[in-house]
Amino acid sequence: MNAVLKPRVAFRPMQKDDLDTIVAIEQVIFPYPWTRGNFMDSLNAGHSCWVMQQDETIVGYAIVMMVLDEAHLLNISVAQAMQGRGLGRLLLEHVMQIGRQYGGLNMFLEVRPSNTSALRLYESMGFNEMAIRRNYYQAKHGREDAVLMGAAL
Image (cartoon, rainbow, N blue to C red; front, top):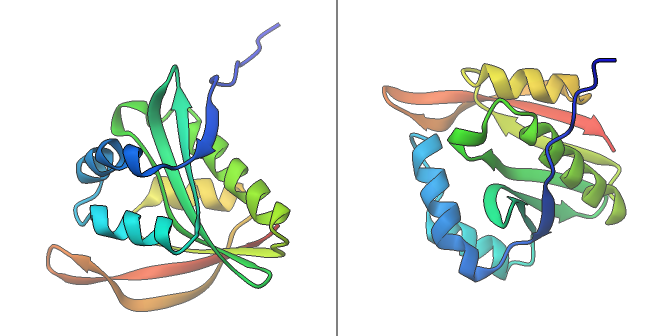
């Protein structure tokens, strides 16, 4: 028998004390990272902010904004050293479940077309392309479009 074990992780609400670690992860994995202020604004606004831990170490985080029956995934990230292990899928499953618990019927997100690993993950989780947002993201040479995706919860 050839069984694949899921990584053992725990989820908990994000705290202000987590922001130093989160911002450090963000700065490594993104060319245009969120700032500490962006994360603080999300916490203060009451968005659904989560961290994923493995052995007490933060290995990922996600922020979901609920608007009526829609969940908008604002940020989902896994620490660079932990990528490629299925943690992004576990984190996405978690926040989709949270969206359902808050009464969400659909989840929406934007993703860079150049982020092919994220696109593959989202498609495998039932997200479909809905539109292109032109010049949405800052890029090294001007702006980059965003793919707007959505999935039923």
